[in-house]
Amino acid sequence: MKNGMNKLTIVAALALSSVLNVEAQSGTNSPYSQYGVGVLSDQSQGFSRGMNGVGLALRKGNVVNTLNPASYSAVDSLTMIFDVGLSGQITNFKEGNRRLNANNADFEYAVGSFRLMPKVGASFGILPYSNVGYQYSTSVKLNESFGSVPISMTGEGGLHQAFIGAGWNVVKPLSVGINVAYLWGTYNRAVQSGSTTYIDDFANSYKANVNSYLITLGAQWEQAINYRDRLTVGVTASLGHKLHANVDIASGDSTVFSSGKGIELPMTYGLGLGWTHGDKLFLGADVTMQKWGSVSTPGIVNQGTQKVYAMRNDLLKDSYSVKLGADYVPSATSRNFLNRVHYRFGAGYTTPYYYINGKEGPKELSVSAGFGIPLQNSYNNRSILNISAQWSRKSAKDLITENTFRVNLGLTFNERWFAKWKVD
Image (cartoon, rainbow, N blue to C red):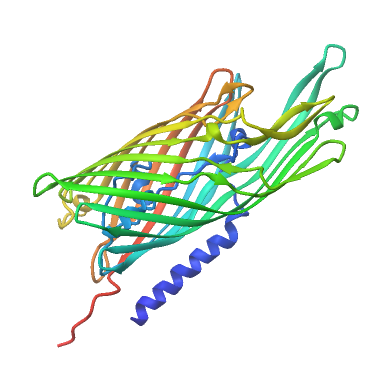
């Protein structure tokens, strides 16, 4: 027991350190993070990253799957599971004949799960929600006589969530669950003009401080087809609401407008289908819809002779995502190491949730592959090192094209803490 408590202390310290440093980090350099609440983060864990984030119908007792809180009821009754993850990425930005590379590294998540009581599992941890990080220059044509005005655009921040959740196996095929998260973060966005003559016409800033909540509901129905095959259907819904964030919007003439209604989250719906063949194969497909089209957000508008920030309802649009993934392990109990490794593959397609100058933003295509490497210890080999790589491409006509190569590292600690040891 003392050994288990020492492990818990170490993992808790790592998680706390991540929390203290998370706001100083930015997982993106994308100019597209200036729209909406930024670049939306992948909220899956290491097991799912190799499958491109598939997991709404994933139901396993040896992993933490926060994508659907109903899955917590499947956790093994004898274990405490911790999962921590990091990522690093290289992004190539292309606009016409110009190219630029940027590197990022980011703390991704720290989550845990355990059996709370018979048929009830619990989870807790820290997850990202969005990232903002960009700095670039452009020019705006003022009029025929004056020509173009140089403009610089900068932004940083993002949203993070600390959550607790529970899943309950109501009857044998049906489980339901809930995640309740404390949502926090800051946004700092600024537009500055390089012209001393027209500095007030283009200088604006937008600052927000978020302290709110996020609630996600989930359900899974697992139906046995035969003694080896199971079909699982998973559904989720995240509740949209106004964040009532403290927002300060300043124009070039030093006029400051403050509001508590500057940021909203949309209703989000997810549907997943999974097929499990024994302990060898999992195939999954997820479809997600986010109702951003009904959300207002601050944007630049003409106010007399000036351009200022104001609330607009024509800048965001509903977004859709489709993901496919597979996990295969030749033989989980084989003495051959390569037969115990999990081999994962995935692909996805996502539509944007914002407009740029009245046109739809870039669509995203992505593919992924990864490994789940069992870590042998004196008791079992249930802890797993998850390594995956993902390539994604965001593109649209006459817009910047982003090609990103990302490497994800996740470590799942799955130790038998609650077993009663018998001494002869």
